[in-house]
Length: 220
Image (cartoon, rainbow, N blue to C red; front, top):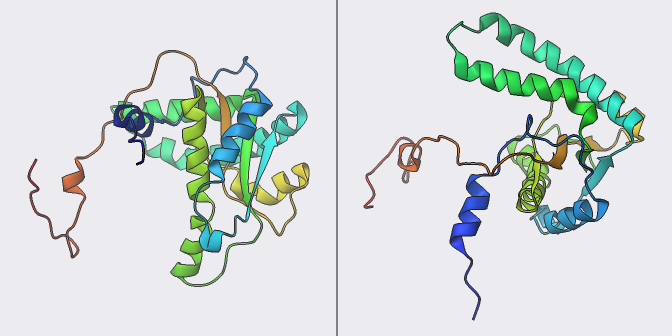
């Protein structure tokens, strides 16, 4: 007989794993053994044909972090410029998000660990199924890593803005051009109190039953 999960704890983990930027503790070191433990957990994630074509580059050297942060910041400025031009004076919620993202871009080099999950292949130039299969082989593992980190008091944020400079970052870190960098996770212990679930639309508003846009009221 299997032992049931503590749904209170499980649901709390799943609903409060947030993108952490301003609350990353830049001064507290992250123990290598904790990172190894979390990645070991992440390797239990599914991958197509159980191929496990992933590698994890952990960047802790200050000079190498500076290089990654430099290219991230270049990409961030270009990405954000048109959005700032369209931002209205009363759009306070968006401004808070931008402020948080800007903080991370400006302080990326100070984060104790930068994690770059990689795939030992390049994305296929084929149809949607091949693309979905390629990314499906790494993204569940990255999310499992973020959950494992969160459960141990560490925060992370899923970012991809360094990828326009994937080649330059790869050269700085010795990542072969045949390898795909999937994301960049700044990782650190987080400061302050616990996190709360974020506002989300009710599930019944985004569920379609049997065909597109077919909704029905479920009993509570």
